[in-house]
Length: 310
Image (tube, rainbow, N blue to C red; front, side, top):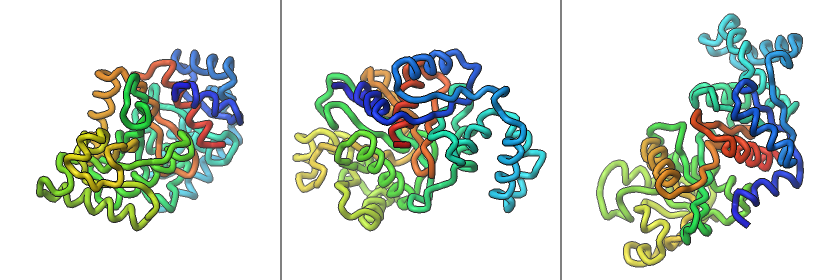
């Protein structure tokens, strides 16, 4: 069974309700039809007419209380935010009226990230929000038969060592819960175990030590060039003592440029399925969508969001 079919079947096993606030996007409408038709999840397609005026006032009051220390979020500004279905949907998710949120087909990633962080809150264990993609590469012997998790691909431009460690921890938890795989983490670099000297390399090595402090039982290594991370034969030559042994399935990129470029290269040149961006580090499950997403991308993101809510 391929990973996409497996994810959809897992979502069907315990139906959750996912809110889709982009009611006027044709791709979202078609995806909602497929999701309901195949029984992947319950979908709430949130239109402006479904936004209850009394409930919206309650959401606005709660939001203002949550962010009373932020002077840029005064009442007129917040009221304008809640004219959009996105913030209403995010507060529904916060309150548990729905189980998860998927949007981004016609909202930018910064808009989607801000709404999710402000309304859902950040997991105190993780301390930061990042994003990842489940990558399903056809006819691939690396990772777990072509299945990988790439992070961070959408949020943190230049993560420090602590942030890299937190990205890795949250990515590993998603791999365990959603993919039911043992996470094998590689912190990627242009260097393998000191083959080059630079501050950026030191930062990645420090991230590994930080991760060991947070989760000593996780299988992780770094810094590793990508071939040493995913190809056992290369790993044996470049760093034969690596605990990952060239079998990494969680690839942690050193910065946002590398992560974004990396996933798009694999998606386009390797004809991979890229499920995401999936937000990591929030208190409730939420998934972003690329504004260039296809209908199947929306369906897949809803399936994963539903599994995370189970």
